[in-house]
Image 1 (cartoon, rainbow, N blue to C red):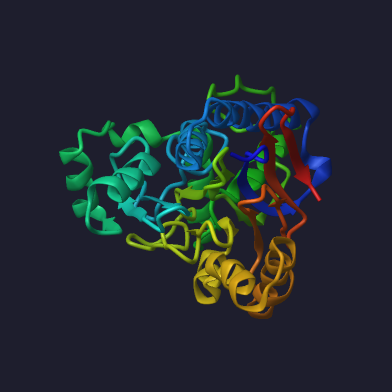
Image 2: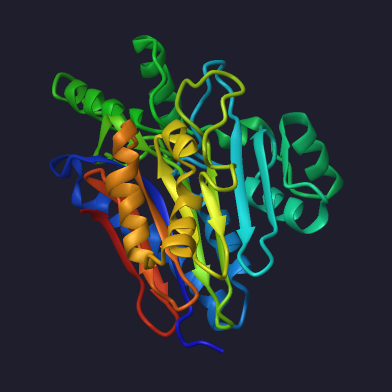
Length: 340
């Protein structure tokens, strides 16, 4: 057994506008990240697997409306929700993924069931939902994923006739709301309104993810997303793709990414970290930094990743101004951060 058990999470990356973040909103993000880390940390402390820890972490992130996954996912161009998720076990190299699901409450749980109970790795759309239903997973009415804040973002994106990366409309929506409030009395806030996000409206990437190494030295990774605001129906990014948005191998590392999905797909970013460790003997830090700081920027790839190796090393590099992130070692207090 190892004493290096640790879990790390991310909740999106982008251009941080520090002045836009009210202290109470910043505190709320830190509190939510910390709560997720504590829950996943407890799984590891109790002897649970890395796979269990990342499943727990991402499931909780999907349930939190602050992040673009599950409840609080962004809207497609048709005003619907299409959710993607993937998970991989570094001990066995088994993996599972779903894409374009519309009624599964927790896509990461569906991905976990694909890993455990299917001979396949990935299901999509109606096929994914049929599989989830056969597995007895929880289904919800599509309205469950709706939040007023995401709906306002979608309306803004439609007005601008473009797709906004993940939930990048939040900052713009908040800015417009603030401007309007100077000219009229403030209306009562919606219960599910996002706090004033500090991310530039055109440079926000809202995937969530988790990586972990357990007490036995096994690693795992999981990633989930609602995609991009106003995206075309059927668009799939890197989050559910093994090797692009998620990868895990005990021999190297576990990786979950967040960023401009198409670029991470073209670079096979998550696998590239592991490949550099395997084939050129790079350390976890060297490999992750090379992918994020050198290789991705060559094709204008923006975002970041989180990664751990079997020895308990943790890295959380990003090439944007900030990334919602944190990690928690067993027996230690969680660490959370937003800015660079």
